Length: 313
Image (cartoon, rainbow, N blue to C red):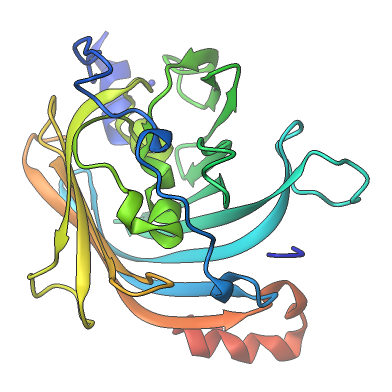
């Protein structure tokens, strides 16, 4: 870190889709940040050799309830290889760029058993030279089983693989068309929220939503708006919000963040129908933030630092 799955089967899938969006012309939809990305260097805040870690109090929409939990966003800049699309460890490969990485960790309990979901997103810091987020990985573990999903930007498309415990998903390899990634929105906000597209967009739903809802991973039409936040769920001065309303479902994603660089994330909300058809809202509210080189803090004595994030020891 230099810079840092018959009715029985259907019931199982529900307990433990989305149709293809209509074809639209390029003029109607925005499918890439390259179409309106304003050239702007990544703020110096990110070049201190530290990571920003923020804990959020979570209420997660799952099954037929809102379940308590916590979420963590870990942001850090990292040297990233564009060919292998992995972290540059040896510094012998010249295909290296600086990327902003998000590790999004989501933990919640559903009655007796629990979920642990982690998504990693790698977005080039220089959007003018590298306009597409290059890689997203997601792993999900619960008491039913595990699933893994990864998508890589190669050959002008997102090459995608799925490995799942459920029969109807099982092992898949396919391509997804070029579109904005829902998973990259946190990074795009942290880099330059002014470049967020407004109006009609083509967006690939987040990997975690796709797996949890057992839907297909393909571009969906949505309406996006960037404006001042005037709600009461999140605290902070001069808050902005970016809201994405999916056209072919009752799903709305709202991310709230500070107006000034480094555009810290105050929290987010996501509403969509639960398995019983009732729309419920996931909400994550910021509670603690630290800036620290956590990869160096791995001794027993460092457990005390967890208190700074409101985490149990």
